[in-house]
Length: 325
Picture 1: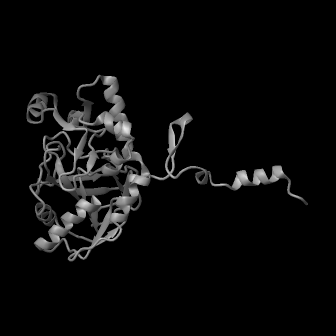
Picture 2 (picture 1 turned 45 degrees about the vertical axis):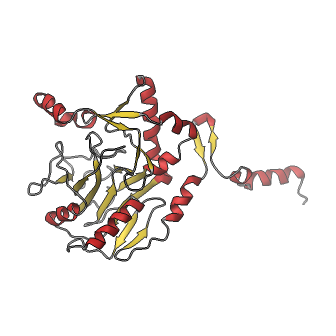
Picture 3 (picture 1 turned 90 degrees about the horizontal axis):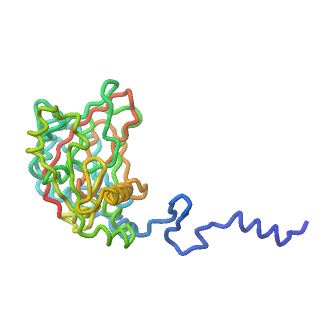
């Protein structure tokens, strides 16, 4: 049996890799607004983080541009200044660092967090009774999880937190992961047109978007006086690394200053969608006594609410940061 020219064409059309016919990079399916292909801008950061070198800790990269497991550290013991310095450096590099099998008490949790700075007291979420610096997230059949949206923490503060340290006290047998998205990679992945468009813009942040239900009517004026609307740059600069970061989120960003409502919504919608790019993400599967420390400027996070009606108990300490610029 002979192979005809049409047979050969069909065979080639059916077995060719479409990516082999285009220059490496992104291609767009205009009909559905989809883009496909490799995110080439991740390569430099991925390679930079591939071979960590520390003297007092072991860092094992687990994600592409973020996420590293830390070994050789016992959080139940007093840590030396040298270890704290290397943990700070690892956090700046990997944006999310985590530790397994760390059965810390609430007091040890607070003591560890204080090594990195002053701690916040959250006005809207109840804390650990003995340690008000710890926010307690206790979810189960009677209390669902509502953190399942991409956000930075407390951007409604004039000085939002630098980072958060979260301890898993009880976790469900499946589900309940936390996802993190690299806002430096997200900014770098914007088109030049979008970068130019948002350069120098500021956004207004408001706690009422997410916490209005926690504030009784007779306390709203008092709380607004304590926590007025705040203005932050749409693109902030990381205080340690100097990287540009997208700094708007769907939980607390009210609007873009100086543009009409339609344009404000368009800009915010586009920017918050960048957190959903899978290649920018790291997903942490929790085990009992896992402790994670994330950089609240560099990443947004999303707590998957997929474990109902099982119980998930976490405690979080947040370290005060610097004013975004």
